[in-house]
Every structure is written in structure tokens, then in C-alpha cells.
Image (cartoon, rainbow, N blue to C red; front, side):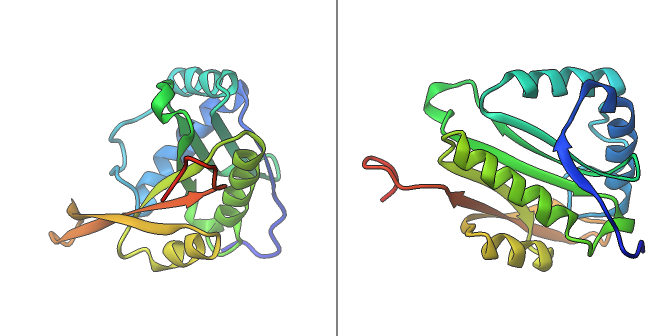
Length: 180
């Protein structure tokens, strides 16, 4: 574990694509909280370059990286839809290298994403979290996320057991015809 960590959060750039590919691959092998096992749904440098450019061009997309001493230690994405009926919402995902867990990197990426959503007229941020990831669920609840549903027996982990995924959302603001 790294002590006295100093890092900055910024928008991902094309030149980050090679390192992001490596970091994403590493993170997938460090936790079972994500959908993928290491090597599955691999994104190459070229794939990530395309994704970064698509996200930079989209009004309802945001790709952030956390950087410490010139190295990427985590990332997050808010991915919105091009469909008009879904354009008010984004799906949030985050990944942080295990050596940097406990340094509030994920929290900082989430806070930046919420501020961006508020400034850009996004009304809802969605995310999925494995039922065993209590630390993440507690953090999301502290930031106003609520459980909207449960995908029962959604993932089979290395212990051979099936676990549920919780669907959580944060509503940015209420409008006249929005919500109940």
C-alpha cells in the first residue's frame, strides 16, 4: 500500500490509451467486483483511443483518469446513450489499482463525475455493484445513490457461488415531469 499519496483527476487523453489498456487489464485481475475476469473484453490501445475520442466528443460522456507521479492509478467513465429517450442518464463505472485502494481515489473520481453530471444536465447516474462490495455500496449511498433493483444470482465468482448485482442510481435534480 502506498502512503501519503498525491494524485490528480483529469479527463483522459488519447496518449493515455496504452497505459489505460494495461491498467484496465491489471485491475480486472485484482478484484472480483467487476464483470470481467482478466483478459476478458480486452481493450487494446487502439480500442481505448477510439473510446477516449468518442467520449470527448459526446455531450453525455466522460472518461476520467486518476494520475499519481505520472502514472495512471485509476479511471472512471460516464457513458450516455445517443438515444433521445435515454439521453438524460449515464452509466458510471470505476476501477482503481489495488495498491491504491483506501486512498479515496474512487471517491474522488465519483465526485468529479457527479459535478460534471450536474453541470451538464444529466438527471440520473446509474451503476451496478456486486452485493459483496459493501464499502462501495456505503460510499454510493453517502453520495445519494439508492438501490433501484437487484439482479439475482447475476455473477458466478471463483468460489463457484452465484451473487447478486445491485442496480443503484443517483437522481441529480427533480424536474416537473421527472420521477414520481
